[in-house]
Amino acid sequence: MEQGKPPGNGAGADNGGGTAKPTRGPGRRLHGAIAHKLGMAILSGQYQPGDTLSGEVAFAEELEVSRSAYREAIQVLTAKGLVESRPKAGTRVLPRNRWNLLDPEVLAWAFAGEPDIQFVRDLFELRAIVEPAAARLAAMRRDKEDLRIMKDALTAMRRHTLATEAGRAADRDFHNAILNATRNDALLTLTASIGAAVNWTTQFKQRARALPRNPIPDHVRVYDAIAAGDPVAAAEAMGVLVDLALEDTASTMGR
Image 1: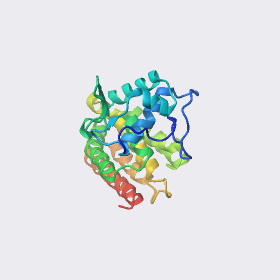
Image 2 (image 1 turned 90 degrees about the vertical axis):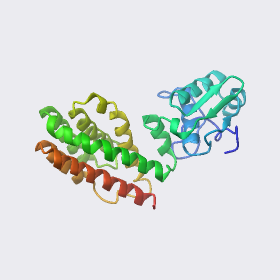
Image 3 (image 1 turned 90 degrees about the horizontal axis):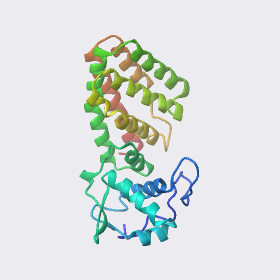
């Protein structure tokens, strides 16, 4: 991207039908809308690592927002490792290995556009490491309440399907319940990130067409193994679930 050029006109979130100017409407603070706009531009590659953003005066005028709102947006991006600001040097995009790519909001920015296939694979590699191990522990440590939550989530997934937000919320609940059942506080810190990765990859692979196959039976096999207290089968079933989800997503991207 041309150095210092703001990404489009207005700082509102793009809801798929064009770019909206920022508003102070309910549910979204102005600086959050600006951070969303700039975050999308960085994650999509419009800004490359090392690029310097133009000063707050130029950006504020271009985006038609106050300088304080722009500064607050930069603070959000800084906290997520995307940029850093230095006196007299300005604000520059940091190397990708500094980005907090597991932050749920950063994941949302990445999938708001066309995510890089390698990034998608990276997410699934992470899931393939974490989730089978979590399923193994869950099979050994789950209690009746954990199983009830998982079963209720499966029921909701069947009722609503993964083509709906309600169905995808149930999908997140299912995966979160497995992490909770591990009784491992370190794993629980990944709950929001894993849930966001599940949500956005599921949404993404349905953009151009319906899901290539029904993934709910894969979830049922994971549940059955956990309910049976079989850690080996639970880990294997979860590994298959994640691998098939990657295949579905990759086919959607035509890769």
